[in-house]
Length: 441
Image (tube, rainbow, N blue to C red; front, side, top):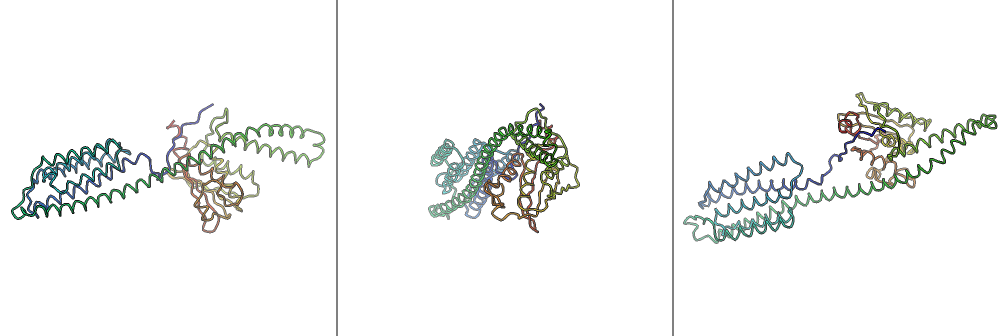
């Protein structure tokens, strides 16, 4: 038996990847560092020129330049990679601690009111880092603060400011506390938003796991039922074959016709069971069918018309070149489910429209039935959500949504402007196309 080519699985567009947390946190540190660079330069220039406190300008301006180079390097890393390690976040915060220590050493040490900015680094570490790393930031910040109490370059005050050092310290403390409050609010707001997005993403993953577990149980039940029904159907086929050759039956044309209808019904039941087993991956000795999109859709429409005589079904194909694909039975069953749903919703005609673009194959099923109400549109793809009002309904669309999601696609539902409903399947050509599949395999 020929094994089917390997398929590429992917997340739905717009999903928030779990490994993006480190990258987003590093981006926040880069933004805060830009704020710190601007604040340092403005403060240094204001204090030196406006307040006439003589600072070592060349040495102090070197630190913002190094921080700028650090930010540019961090941005280049963020563009090339999708994740940032915990160690890299720790080193980035450690760099900010040493940069702050250097500036404080050059501007009065522990007597500088801006020494309280160490608390910002500790707060960032408490949110972003693991326990051992947080205590590392605490230890380094504490040691640096202690060192600055003994080793620092004193401020060179002008004669007019000599007697107002305490007043300057009070004003500086007020400015420092205001800066700490503003920075923490800005940062914590962004972190909270990131955490909310992550929780939403994890909630979706949990919901998807529950739905997939539900599908597994349904698949096992359907597979078991298919095996159990296979034997009695085979017996019925044998009995009907014997009846067809009985003289008593041959003598009555009406009975011959009824036996033929019964044989056709049994054959259809066996075809349905075969499809169930193939969808469950239990077919034996059959190679995957390779065809083109147009023939694949036409075959689905032909079989559905035979099973539903008198129900108009129209197929429209866009003016595109369609690739050869692997005709997966689960896709056939998904499209058939959509056609059955449209018929059961009271439609008097159904239109199936097929088109494509560079990445996606679009299969739309549109009808003139009752359409979806607002609550149904909000819960499309949820189990047991049905507009037909039947107990146990809604599983057909539920299975369609999950089959398409497994293939890396998506399902959109809407109501037509003149009534009726439309279901649009978007299937990735990278998953279906024979050429793409062979390349991946």
